[in-house]
Image (cartoon, rainbow over all chains, first blue to last red):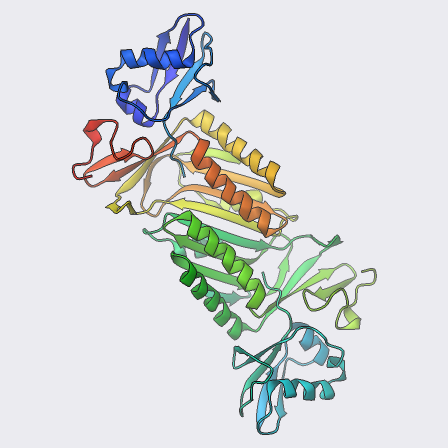
Length: 81
Length: 81
Length: 149
Length: 149
């Protein structure tokens, strides 16, 4: 199955892309997707920010199981205001 | 000697005048002036608001001694805002 | 900017006044005429000031706020005369490098204004009017006593 | 009114939105672009948002404020894209019957916004740029590392 991943701010600049579609295995969690992306994009490996995870525009935990067509965002520490 | 007395808000409506000039004796205090005005204007007698005293646009105590030409205001409880 | 005026208040003017490249925050407060108080319907408000002293006291409030918090600029403008429901009676704007100081100084300014600045508010009801703060439910002047207060 | 926009912010629009005959107080907060941070000169700011989720989170902040305090109306608008020094990056307006509630809810809104709403600020210096909050002095992307940070 496939999910859409959007990148913003520092992560967007790291990855060099604001949106990708990625194949994942049935039952993958959002935490596992992040580990897979770190393998795809070596520049993500040293990232040790406290990321939040958003799926379909809601914050979720690292163990959240993804569904086909989900929109996933790894949220760097926010700094609006 | 003479002082100018200005009345505002509830006191102005009581006295029916916004400004008067009054003769006072040498050495009179602002508190004594208030008592004299209560005799002049019977409607001021029942006034038991917590008045503040201002002389020449500064707050003063009841024992403040007046000078010729002073501008005196008896300040009803303020309610700006 | 510390001013008493009969004109309607323009917050934008205060914002422009306090704006500064050193500021990261602007806190403002608007007092607006509310259509009710203590369960009674209010028709309109009327403010009166001892203008020369009021402007001096507004400036004193601003200086005291500046003494207590690290703020950039402060503006306080109070309207006098009739004020209709929803209209602005007082406008305060404070700029500071950081939001905490802007909020605290703005809050201080309105609290202090209400204690010391010689400005008085009259509430006009359908059946009477009352100078706020001058008495506990007993109007000074019986002629203005509300009929069913 | 909960919105993310690329246009410059108009506080007057928010004030009109929150105005109410039931309100005696309107508290507002403006975040403005400051020309310095941590001792460095800031040239300009750039904000980026996850817009659909940001507007949803702004609404959630507003609802939470309304749940905690007796307020009339709340508006929160955040600008994205480049923001020049002294320009407004975020505007919040809260109306309430009483000033305490207006101040508290306004303060809550900006504090909460800074914790949860997916919006990011980049500070641009003369010699580099940095996404605020993403690292402790160590830029993620070495290409953007300031030369004398």
